[in-house]
Length: 286
Image (cartoon, rainbow, N blue to C red; front, side, top):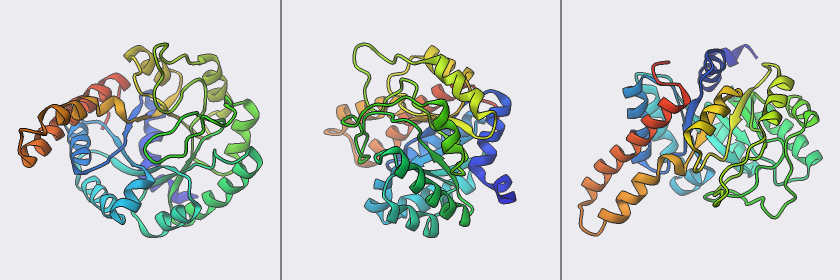
């Protein structure tokens, strides 16, 4: 597995764990997201993990991924391309063999645990054949987002010590634990996280995998920073860095030209991305 030392996502997260900061990993839905996120990374001199959902592959026949990869190659800071929440085995095989991903989340969390682990191990080995690093989710981070299967109707499960060991044994590089975080909205109560469980997971992992934070919608700054301090090095964000962009589109779309909407929308994404890079401590680390 010497090749992993040259894998961009692996390099970015290894440095983040050693440096004690988090790397922002936003979801890219269009060219505005790609440009806004990379421009933020260059402005802040911060590393970046640019993510897409499987939807981007099926919608654009992979074109959006090729665009993101080209932008990443030409960026003046380290940028990797990651496929988030890949739940379809056939699509994972296609993505690994044919698309320029640095890493893939093999998400079999919609299966019961024994089958989840078996399928994860098989697909991790497949990705590794293509020199692609992998992520998986022990426990169940409930909820769903943008074409990702909703697990809220399944019995919620927080990550246990045994699961940490079981998932590391599948060969993954990045572990996305469930410690009170959920996909989607938290409601009026806000996030209620079990930091003691996160500490246990970090201790059990013992540097063998990087820790990934999912479910950050509406996270206050102090909660985000506490998760980074608790060992989370890959920080998945979605709505958190798109809110102002979506509000701008809603307000201006009826009266503004499409080119202006795209240009100004890109700036809105860049502003929130720069804010999160400051919060997670990755500013100046590239």
